[in-house]
Image 1 (tube, rainbow, N blue to C red):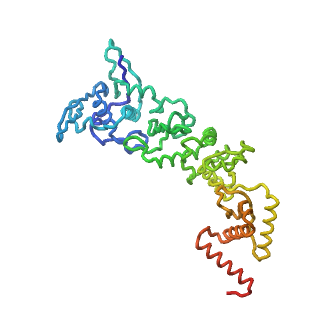
Image 2: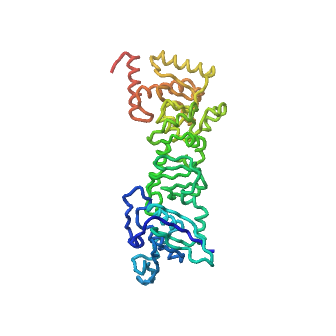
Image 3: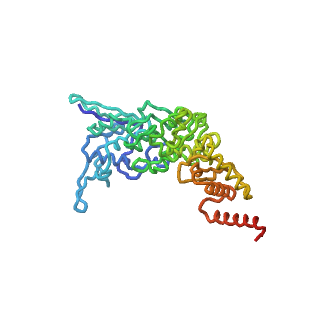
Length: 437
């Protein structure tokens, strides 16, 4: 039994479409899938090059394809002929094409023309020819070889029209499907990206994707930015919940979630009263999370940061002192021990008696980076509990430096801060000596 893939569409195709390279009436029409004008020619070249039986009918007329050998610079080529008319094309066109590209191109053209239909025609040896024309239609019949059979058997890996696992669809026909083996992204129902090694949260069918002449995504960066923008605006609690619960080991983890596109308010509603924890340093908070695991959501730091940028105080981030919620690098002690309380009081008394005013509150805890002894954040002095093992001078020095950072607004290791400290020291000397320079 011989089987054919049958692809039909409304109207009668102009035979020039088979040999006029670069000609496309769809280039300026964003509603169309194809617009480069080369795919159909490459498809014909592939079929002829691989000796695959096929037929094309426009209304009741069969378009006949053949080849003629031509020598060019001591090399022989098969020049394509359409209805016995020699063209400037050879069967070498699209030399690196895969079988599914052929089905993709012809099917895309059929969809663009309207009233498209794809089916399988089975023909027994005893049957008369079942590859027949249809009035008012353009019809392609392509013999199913092993390679084409694989496409038929795994149709949803290439086209989304038969997928029943839609999780979300918007008014622009952008769709989100359940994830499958590998990352599959469609544009208007036609696959434009496939990465077998990736494990995504979803498969996507996005009309806004820009493709190149090979019908694959033109810019990886633009696609990822556009996808994040799309997912941020989504208002489906089901989709958002799945992202929040499962993203840490999925492909979407690496997306640029902290760009300046805003999230829909539905994200806040789904997060509720839970506290966000940056995945990259979640181990630092392990003991705290263990106490009440249901009160925390571990997410990629870029997603945590993006949510914090949009919602600010409506989003709680563990260790969030600076208001950005990305690093979550400081863990506050619940209470100081007797030694720490004693030393802190001693050092603050020393500073007060020396005429130095500590203007900001002090919080003691642990930094994710163990080398950090102090930090100035959000009008607060943060000091590591390790500093208490280094003696009073180190405690005073740390408090003094961070207090001056907050007063001056200058950063560490800058000439401006160095000058500020020098001038501050001179001012203190003036006060003590009653000599003013």
